[in-house]
Length: 230
Image (tube, rainbow, N blue to C red):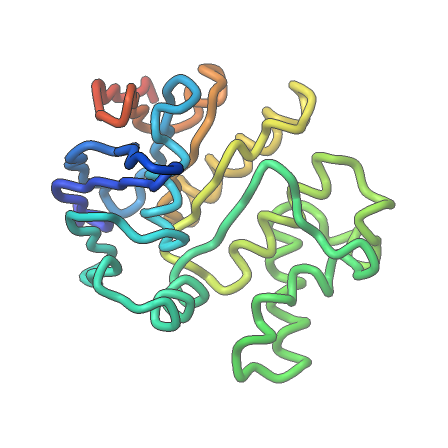
């Protein structure tokens, strides 16, 4: 399989007052194109830091991150922002939807940075909403939708630009069990049927079962990699 993400000797250090704290210690990791990876570990293990580095939301202290042949650790902040908008979709625990906008308009937001016409943006947003099962909710505002439906809108927004990589940080952390399993099933479908490469942080072992691989971090070190049953 083609490697999409290649990480070598990755470290991340933060300055906390007078001392430096190394959160990640020499991580080596390859993620294949079309994989669905769950990142697990105790609080403070570095999993969200690693996720943010893979998604280009942060830069490493040392080491390399190669995504689809692009060394993103060598990009400046402006270049990194452009790279993210072209290659990565983000899904967070809290949906971050604009409350005054319809589902359709929320999904269109990433497309405002492109040269697409208004008609094409609307068409693409409609396709993304259909893909997540909300074709009949395009005119609804977030306050008129359930938590699970709001997360579906957030996922539609994440995929509307057809990114190579989906970065998901606790995407079911604010949902009840039934809604969570629906969202995880949707992510699994995007991975299996549409070839999206997904990296997901979760604290829930049941959520991790929807992924193809589970990576365990502890104290900033990759300690275990498990291939999940099909």
